[in-house]
Every structure is written in structure tokens, then in C-alpha cells.
View (spheres, rainbow, N blue to C red):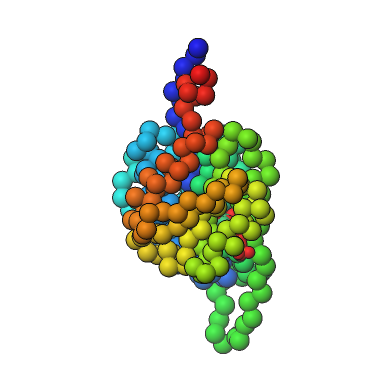
Length: 227
Ligand code: CTP
């Protein structure tokens, strides 16, 4: 029996997107990228090969074991995913990707107050997770998030699981965004739902999540797969 100990190749997305309105203004959200960064650190700690696709947030901490690539817009992230996804075993889509973006950004220059008022026309962004999931292989594990009001997050997570064709969706309440802690539940394709043991720090959550994923083929050590 050949024993391979190749590290799992994990892609994690984190942070908000900025969608330009003009040369100096953008639409964004409150995501801090902290959850995705905690996931990247935990994955590196487990000896995996980690690529962190990080949005426009201040870079902090020490990520010597993590390959980090930066994005600003949804379109940038779309390009990075197209490059990195074919070779990965696991995708954790923690980025708070914009759902809408200005249809026409004023590329050169700044909208002036004296010419206003203005109306912003918004168009939906492409669903990046659904797009990459269309070519997902059975040996890949894709996990998305559903950030929703607490009372509707379960139903919404189940809808996203169906619509995006991913392996699991993690439902978490709106308060998670920008917070140091998270209380969540993971919904698997086979109908299983597992809740975090109460409110966790984002680094404890990262460890909990990877333990939850341990049974998936993409996370198993190849030496045990060959047995
Ligand atoms: N997501 C994505 N591309 C988008 C928007 C979201 O890949 N344009 C990903 C997020 O990273 C997250 C998951 O999809 O993992 C759910 O994000 P959410 O914004 O809650 O989902 P939407 O598909 O935008 O659903 P809704 O109809 O509720 O806005």
C-alpha cells in the first residue's frame, strides 16, 4: 500500500467586498474578515496547505504558514476562485460577498455634490459559490455560510444548501458580523444539523468546524482512504 501524507489543500475566503461607485467611493459591508482568518490559522496549524483569499480589511497577525491573496471587488474574487478552486480539496466561503453592486461606476473621477441628487442603480452580483460548485468534484468539500436574522437562519440555510449545491451551509445570526464570537449550526446535505456548543470565540469555532468536517472524503488522510 502506498502511503501519501499530502497536506489537504484548503481555500478560505474572508472579508467584505468593495464595489466602486466612483473613483473614491464604494459599497461595502461590516465584515472584519476575522472568522476567515481564524479558519486559515487553524487550517495551517493542522498542517494543511492554506490559501486565504482576503478582502479589503487591514491585515493583522502573523500568517507565515498561510498564502494570502487579496481581492477588492466581487469580480476580483471571482477571478481568484477560478484560479485556485480546481486544485483545492476544501473551500470554506466565509467572505461576505456583496449581493448587489452599482451598475455603472464612474471610473475616472468623483461625483460632485453640486451635480446631485443621484440615484444608484444596483445590479445583482454573480453567485460565486454557486458558480464554482457547478464544477465541484465528489472529492472536494465546499462549505458556505448563511448570515441571517436568528429566527429565519435555519430555513434560509436549507434553501442555500439546495440552491448553491454545496456540501454544507453554516447558519449564523446577523450579530456574528464584526463580532469576536459566533454561535452557529452546520447543515449537511444528508439532512444532519449540528450546533456549536454555545457561543464560541472565532478560533475555537474554526477548530470545531474542521472537526465537524473530518468525516468528509476531502478531509481524510489518503493513507486511511487506501486502507
Ligand atoms: N456568496 C457568493 N457570492 C455572492 C453572494 C454570496 O459566493 N454573490 C456566498 C457567501 O460567501 C456565503 C453564501 O454565498 O458563503 C451565502 O451568502 P448570502 O449573501 O447569505 O447568500 P445569497 O446567495 O446572496 O442569498 P440571499 O438571497 O439571501 O441574498
